[in-house]
Amino acid sequence: MRQFSLFTVSLSSLFLLLIPHETPSTVTALYPDLTNTTCKQCAEKSTAFNYDFCTSSLQAIPVSHVTNLQGLALIAMELTLENATNTISNIEKMIGAGEFDPFALGCLKDCLELYGEGVSMLVDSIQVFWWEQYDAANLLLRTVLETAATCEEGFKEKAGEVSPLSVENYDLYQLAAIALCITDLLSPALDSDSS
Ligand SMILES: *[C@@H]1O[C@H](CO)[C@@H](O)[C@H](O)[C@H]1NC(C)=O
Ligand SMILES: *[C@@H]1O[C@H](CO)[C@@H](O)[C@H](O)[C@H]1NC(C)=O
Image 1 (cartoon, rainbow, N blue to C red):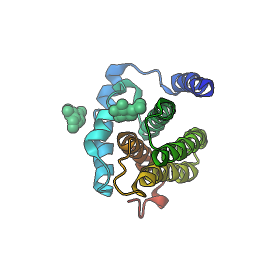
Image 2: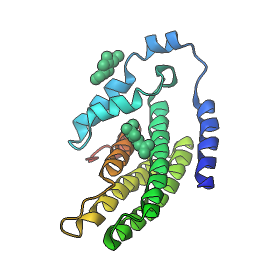
Image 3: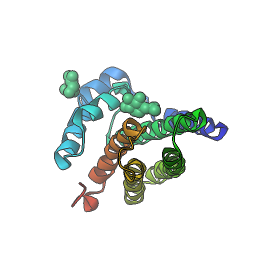
């Protein structure tokens, strides 16, 4: 737990470095709807991509922070990281509550491990993104996307089992998909089959 709140602290300071010091009005004039156009482009590339989720997640960030695609990608990665970190504490609570049958408990423990790996891959993806290694970031984000699917599928292995993490897995998938799509846009060579 402690280790995850430390992530958050160091990430917020990272975030401050990221924000260019431009006045909001200049930025609004120059970048009227980068969020919307990017979400639209991504939705056109993949049917699994949820446009409304994309705009509402990214619009939670003040527009003055979003000046280019790189900035938007970092915001998407940080939102994904924050989300996955919150989900880890939710899974820990679920495991602690003792309300699940042994099968579901096993799945929850698998998911906890998967999300732990997901969080470290997200930290790595932010790091390599800073070094402009967009293809390496792309690969990591693709694996994070699979994390969500793998966690969800675990519960489906037993007939009648309902995943208590469907919403969390959906959110992780959609958030990572935003970041993945933007790294695709930044490295045209990777852009051939992204769905
Ligand atoms: C972006 O899209 C949202 C919802 O889809 C809409 O409410 C908003 O006005 C759009 N913003 C711009 C600048 O086009
Ligand atoms: C994850 O992000 C989604 C979309 O922004 C939000 O609705 C949800 O509450 C977040 N979940 C957690 C556990 O932080």
